[in-house]
Amino acid sequence: MADLIIRQAYGAAAATITAAAAADSKPACATTNEFDGRIGVRVSAIFVILTGSLFGAAFPVYAGRHKGVGVPEWAFFIMKYFGSGVIIATAFIHLLAPACNALTNPCLTGPITTYDWAEGIPLMTIFVLFFVELMAMRYATFGHNHDDEKEPGDHPDSLQIRSRSSSNAQRHTPGDDHLGHTREHIEHEERAIETSPNGLTGTIYSPHEVEDYAAQMTAIFILEFGVIFHSIFIGLTLAVAGPEFNVLYVVLAFHQTFEGLGLGSRLAATPWPKSKRWTPYFFALGYGMSTPLAIAVGLGVRKSYIPGSQTSLIVSGVFDSISAGILIYTGLVELMAHEFMFSNFMRRARLSIVLYAFGMMCLGAGLMACLGRWA
Image 1 (cartoon, helix red, strand yellow):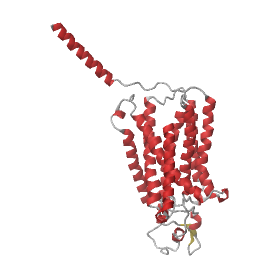
Image 2 (image 1 turned 45 degrees about the vertical axis):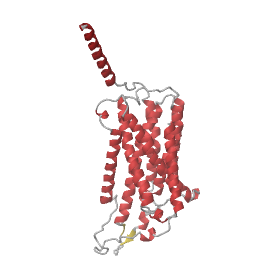
Image 3 (image 1 turned 45 degrees about the horizontal axis):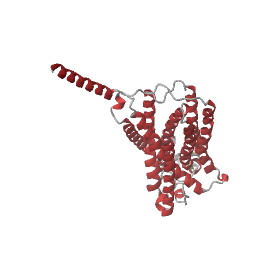
Image 4 (image 1 turned 120 degrees about the vertical axis):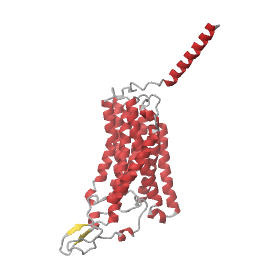
């Protein structure tokens, strides 16, 4: 009888230990990728995605500056708000969701599993970006000279500060009110040149104009970095994808083109100074090259790059979280709040125009959300 009790107790203890061990055990992270050859098709993805990305990001800028292309104003209106929806959906569906999946993968161990980093990192990113924009608005100079404490004439060589009220009073077409600030492609150097009494000429910008330009440049830089981080990792993933490569190829070709249109519409709506007229094309080139270069790198390291490894999951998850925070902030603050609620044009526009813009934004977001589901 005593032996039976001992054996039962021993069996119960062994079962408890086995259950605890099974609960504590974690599945192993991937040690290989699913690369299955087809080098020719994968190389073609470099050029197809490069073409789509560059077209999407650069064409709106070119068409906006060359009216002879024949793109009507309503097309820019559609691209602008459709692109806003694309960027917002990218933040949640193509960045935040993959970041959650990567950073909560059951195979991960260590400090990354002790907190909800996939949500915490975007939260921190949003506050950092707000602080950066706050300081940019407060201390922005961006190379412009201005002195808002001196009245014109205090110094014989002082230059007159020219008001832009006359330009702001002009009629504006839909789609020209970017970030609720300046609405035209203004040649700053030509509009702000004044001559002093002694014959000297120079360029002076009012504090309001400098703040407008600072806000827009900060927003463009933030948006650019967000989409580039994202584009690099999807390029690496595409390069070593397995059976799902065909579907991923098609989806990413459309994804990068539409996301490029979202970025390009922002670039086209920004009033770049004449001295920086090539800057938007450099932004477009940086975006367009990011995914193709990542695909090329991924093909080069196809035997060693493992998307499902612990290191890759953490790195991609962290960068996707950062990018998600960037695009969430940009989308909600710059593309929704500024473009609708703080826009002089939208406040005065007919309700039908406001609803049409909102509908275009919903269409862009819905399309990108569906692309994310198919991927």
